[in-house]
Image 1 (tube, rainbow, N blue to C red):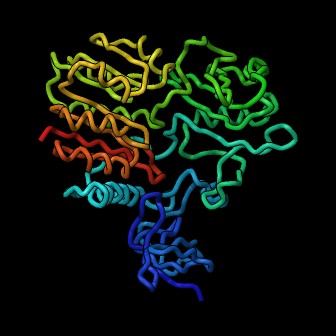
Image 2 (image 1 turned 120 degrees about the vertical axis):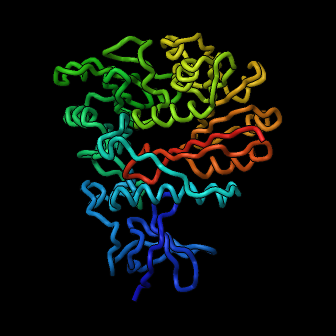
Image 3 (image 1 turned 90 degrees about the vertical axis):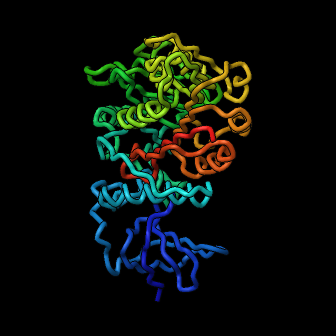
Length: 413
């Protein structure tokens, strides 16, 4: 008979974690803290840990709830990891994930941080990306992957964490998939700051020639802008809008309201910026730069995405902002000495040369925004030689998933 284990917490990535009889930690998707579960036969044993699947809930935990999304239950959708947990339990799990990373990886003596709960627990995503399974030269299935079968794709009916406006667009698109590019590999739907809906079709081969036909076939109403993203090349507008419009392929948080709260809190912690110089590194379309300028700083914002930077240059701001397109590690030597720095790096974290610059020439105040607790903790450990932590706060930008945004404010030691 398969082993019964007690789940004691939620690990990074969202799996429940318990202990096998031999002492190894075992990670089990869709398990809840406080419950006893029977493991499915075929536990995958590694040297120091194991992975298993849930076969039976022997005693349910108090925090388990019925997941509302049929895809989560029947298709084992990998997009969400925590729908089976009550929201308060999700928040507690994310606090623990961040705190554990900061202590274990960062070697920092800090408690689990407070967390700001989401404005919306459902229908918050302003962007959804769908994978395409091909057959007969056309899209045969467009949807998501099961968490335990990354090579399979199930067709999407509805994503409960995605904005209603995008799901309405998806319902209108599904009968018209033949008007998408023949070599389609990924389909992204996105809302911009003005509520316009964007379709980004990624494909190899010939350009998307039926974009205008598709747009004309969609029901009249909110505007739709069609983009073609070649596999090796820059995205371009094919129908519905100017080529210089909102850069729909640029990085932007999927929960805009919560991202705004996190960004504003980070900038507020930097203190009085009037007359000082501030860097906004990995600045994207310039949101943090505008906040910094609004507090009186002279701002230099750097990002590698040329389209994002070009759009940011047209934004209204209380003070002029210097927007620079380039790799942060290459641009740093050209920037004036800062009084404050905001960094929002990708999940890989800070480039080593950026870390060296910040440690060799410490700035008075540094705010680090991160969606990856592990790389955040690694970078904080490196920065700790010349900085001390002034404040830490987590923000739930990704309800129903195991992801969490963390803001850490550092001061020169």
